[in-house]
Image (cartoon, rainbow, N blue to C red; front, top):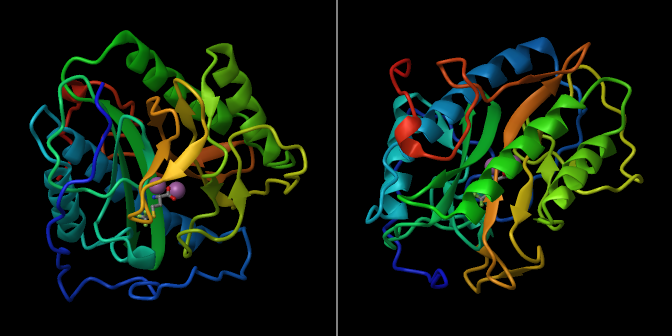
Length: 302
Ligand code: MF3
Ligand code: CO
Ligand code: CO
């Protein structure tokens, strides 16, 4: 498998002037959020809409995945879908990120910049799509196959998805957020996969990254107690080899040091009285599964 290399990027895409931009656009500093981790029902209702658009955007974009298709094309499709649904593509100009979504191929762990590199048969590609609409965010990610993918990457993709859903299932009021990482790491270890430590889940609502951190490995000191109304992402990145990371000198693209392949899935969720509700649900009502893009059904998306 040849290492992924940067290719030329196209110009920054325009967003119609009628779409409201998030406050961080054009600002290079990190967001500073000092409000509560708990959101009221009006915010959560808006997040269902932001989440649905973000989930539908992944499906519509993933349907385009095939050998020879560039990640820039995937960016164009996702960008247009979000704009058509009056959502700002939240990655665009976020701390200077130049594109509307992240496309991360094979050993790229996350924050891959869409460019003119064509996808190759046998690769895996992560699509990470975040919307901003009506003052709130919906953030999700899934891993898809390009053509014919080997057994190792298929298993990695499946286990990463299942680890995320296992981590989400143990969320309940009264439990510390550390249970999420404990469950994810334990499951990943069964398959001897690496768990990326430097990139984490995060509080997500009016703020894209609120400051609340959700780890995907076991860290008992992370003792924030879950409460109804808390909204955050769970977004494990698992690797076939070592989970040690390094960054390209573009300042964004994160890869495994050993160039082993990585899969990622992400959902935005809210803690309810009894467990959780996933907010990044497609129009079909069926949760995103990733994997083979030919299995995607777009019939309920308008
Ligand atoms: N969506 C990513 C996350 O899950 C963040 C991407 S920020 C960008 O937190 F600037 F790289 F787009
Ligand atoms: Co996220
Ligand atoms: Co994301």
